[in-house]
Image (cartoon, rainbow, N blue to C red):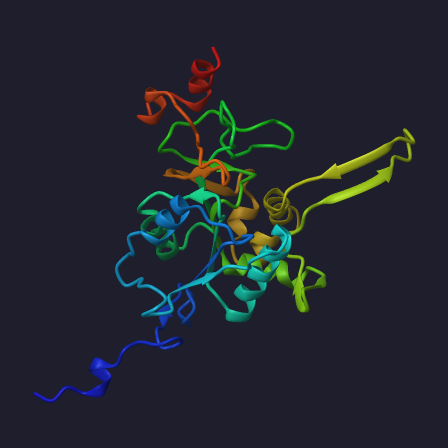
Length: 289
């Protein structure tokens, strides 16, 4: 039997198309962004590159469904904005941030792939922790209220503040922020301040005292999405109405590694918490007695 060239043709960049939920054809499905100064722990490398690849997901050396992006040697905010530019220029459907000190669990890409296929949640984060004893989970409800504690491991928790250690963001969110963000230049490359490190000082007109504010790019991103109507503009109006529009999937249990010492956090969590039998609030009481 004669085999046609079409049947045996190997896929190349731009040759793999994937249907989006809106019926359009999409060739660039996911950009994985890892801002880094260039130093990787072997534990991180093993966790990142030993991931199980979902069916019909493939790797970049075969099909360009998954596209890694690693801006090296930049300040975090600049690296993130270079990644935002890559999302916009490449018309990627999704962006995933994996920071270079976050060790993702096996099966992460399978779970992320399921979220992308369902296409019903624009921002999803895994759960990870501060490098401290006791550790603090990085998920928040409200500003200035500390971390949110009333959840069990395995829950899907809705919050209004998430980190970027292991986070999936729909490309439309990035594109809408891009449209309304000012241009600036990073090492000769023109990009936009989709992500920003809020930092300002001013004299309070009432108290005449010097006031200073600062923050992180992840929480600033969350605030912009909620206050600038970004969910609505990006095609997710139901999320604009939510008090807590960001999802943390605690089944994606991410570990936080100290680059210098190799110590991995969290350390010594109560067994009952790891089994999903008690809340984090209850676990914290046990750990701080």
